[in-house]
Each structure stands twice: as structure tokens, then as C-alpha cells.
Image (cartoon, rainbow, N blue to C red; front, side, top):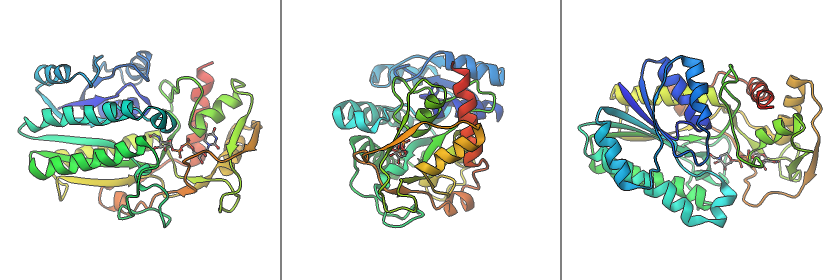
Length: 337
Ligand code: WQD
């Protein structure tokens, strides 16, 4: 059975491709390499021994999208990662985000509309909740006004899929609202490849530990949390990849009660920035150089998942600890030197 993974050479996409191949799916990847590297394909092949089909194309080109689906008419499901994802950049350049994250979603859904039946998994984010009123965050938490165009594209994306599924019973879709993906495959052959200065915490930590960065800036230590630093739910990317396969299998088996559903995908455990630093120092036995600076614009105080629905309905539960995820990120970073 052939599955299309858009953005399949990206951080999460590449880990999902490996899991899909290990589960016996045929995979075709679309990636425009704007935020990834063709060498990730070698990493995937080195892990599984299976070469996925790969097409370098830009999903903003509607004719190219149509041609792709004509050529690959046997695609049964799509896992859609291809999108821009830098919160700060989205504030500076909103139209890039609306074109790339919304336009491409519409083009793909227009192709799935033509199929007898199609499964679709959407890469969403806990960002849709903004600063939730209650912790842990359940799927019934209010969807607040997005704090950034990036977050808005995830909210709008889910609405577009819901509206599409309402009138297209042939499309079955699931949105996975990720919390904070970190870590890398145990082989350290694939992992997070931030371009330029890392925006996210864990790659900045690992690059500080290798000496590539002089010191980590901790964005604020006067939040209303136990140690004053912000709290997040850090989920191992391999656990996250497993959640995608579980969601896909459920859609393919037509087991989803409605043809659009969504799940919070996290560990259910919140960790502060200082707790992440301490955990990293413990597992790597390295002292991390950091300083406390001002809060970062747009950051929420805390966000960690209530995993009741994803555990009980999707039948998936995170297996790896924060320490295991951090150690895998460290092993990967060392391989980049
Ligand atoms: C985590 C914590 C920072 C960097 C964003 C998006 C989310 C997803 C993941 C795409 C926060 C603190 C960070 C640093 C720091 N993106 N931090 N120093 O902001 O929770 O989530 O990235 O899918 O949608 O919103 O992740 O890793 O940037 O920050 O102190 O150099 O680490 O303030 O508390 P975030 P993050």
C-alpha cells in the first residue's frame, strides 16, 4: 500500500518514513528541500535498507501537484508535514506562511477529493491552544486566537480539513496536535537539522554542548511556575512517529468514528527549561553554559498534554523518557561534528 509523505525529508517526516517502511508500507516522499537536505534520504535507506520513491517538487505549484497524483494514482494515504514552521519568521513574513501552509493543503485535498477513498493525516500543533486555561490540555480546551501566523495556519488548516471531510465522506482525516518533538532515531542516522541558529530549545542545547554555540539563553525565569522557567511537553520524535502509524492504520481500517478527528500527542508530562537543562547535564555528564535573559515574545507559560484520548482511542502511549530523548539528541549532534 503506497503512502505519500510530504516533507518526508524533514525532522518528523523522516522518522515517520522509517516507521512506515518498517511496517511494510510503500512510501513516496515529496520534499522541496527548502528546509531539509537530500542526505536525509541516505539516512533513511541506511536504517531500513529500503529506498523510498522521492520527488523533489514544490507543493505551491498546483499543476505539479495534479501531475504527481496522476502519476501516483495508487497513493492510498497522505501524511502531510510539508509546511513552514518557524513562529518568529511567520510574524515577519505572514504571506509566505499562508501561501505555503494553506495553499498547499488545499491543492492536496483537491486531489484527494477525486479518489474513491483516501486517508489524510495532518501535522498540527499544540500551538492551536495558545495559552490554555487548564493543565494538562485536553482536546476540548478552547482554541484561542493564534499568537502567530504559523499557529493560525494550523488552526485554519484543521478547519479546512473539517469542512472538506463534512462533504467528502471518501476522505478520512486525523489531525495530530504535537507538543514539543525532540531527539533522534537510535542509530543517529537521522535527526533534527535546524538551518542556521536553532530556534528550538533542544538543538540549541546540543549545539552549546558541542561548543558550536557559546551559551544557551534561557528565555525568562520569572514565569509563574515552580522554578520560574516555562514548561513544555517534550516528546521523543520516535514516539511521535509511532503515533502517526497508529493513526494511519486506524484510518485505513476505517475505525475512526467520524471522518475527521484530532488528538493531542505528548507524553502528558511537563518539564521546565531548567529541568531540561539538568536532565541533559545528567545524561551527558556535561556542564551546560547558559544565562537567563528576557522572555521571548509569544511564548506561553506552560503547555503539556492530557493524553487520555490518544491513549484510549488511538491506542498509543509515549514510551521514551525525557532523558532518553535528550541522550538521543546528543548522540545525533555529536555525529554532525
Ligand atoms: C521551548 C521552551 C522557550 C530556545 C515551538 C512551536 C511549536 C513547535 C515547536 C513547530 C520555551 C525555551 C527555547 C532557547 C529557551 N514548532 N527556549 N531558549 O516555542 O514551545 O514550540 O516549537 O512545529 O509549534 O510553537 O518550542 O523549543 O522554541 O521552546 O529558553 O534558545 O524553551 O522559551 O519555553 P516552543 P521551543
